[in-house]
Length: 300
Ligand SMILES: C[S@@+](CC[C@H](N)C(=O)[O-])C[C@H]1O[C@@H](n2cnc3c(N)ncnc32)[C@H](O)[C@@H]1O
Image 1 (cartoon, rainbow, N blue to C red):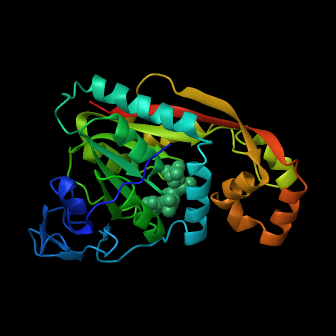
Image 2: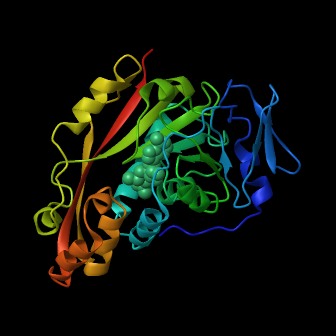
Image 3: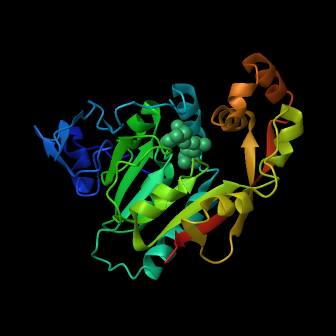
């Protein structure tokens, strides 16, 4: 179970300021007025929100809004139930492997950046398991960023678009984690240190299979990992084979409602119809979680 930490909002971003960059021109940022604003060398200024996150978007602003408040709240409810704990453990283990492979010293304060970090559940757990590591949680959703900003004392929360230039210095990140979230291979290759790696968790065909037919939600398509590797070609290459992570969960109707509420399926089903279908399920049922974990490194 991940603990929620409290801290002063003003200094939230100070741990990672050396890694952040102006989204417009990539120049370094510094905190001013007790870290209530970040100002770049080129003079652009970005206000730190009262809740402790900063929006780092280029001149055109953000093109997406990401998960809405209801989806984030459903995600928080489901994840704090601990149902995805084996995914969390697999990610934390992979981060340790990547830091070992990169020969990162114990006292190096490595930088771990999660893209599409949601509520920060995975990132905060990972930071708990890597002493002294610093986290950057990036999400385009301000609702997610509010959670991210308070998920761990070593996490800085940044609202930014994964498909745009990331507001991060080149060659500054030891490990990038991407859990059911967008992947921008070119930018990942740019921000990774030479020995850094990306860790991607992708849902696999058969994920939540027992719920698909009764609830009318579509299955994960086959070959997702292979397509991801193809799309990354020229920027990143696989490190070893991708590995399955599969386990069974016992879910009650409320947990199932939260699981569906945090997923894109929530947008495609009418709430009344979904509620009726969930009520028709057994009170408790066994549901399979199935994903693959893939590591990608820079092309040397
Ligand atoms: C399926 S959720 C996964 C959240 C988190 N990784 C987890 O597993 O709990 C996808 C997340 O990606 C975010 N997202 C979607 N599009 C994005 C984009 N273009 N840039 C950054 N984040 C994005 C959403 O707001 C959402 O929080």
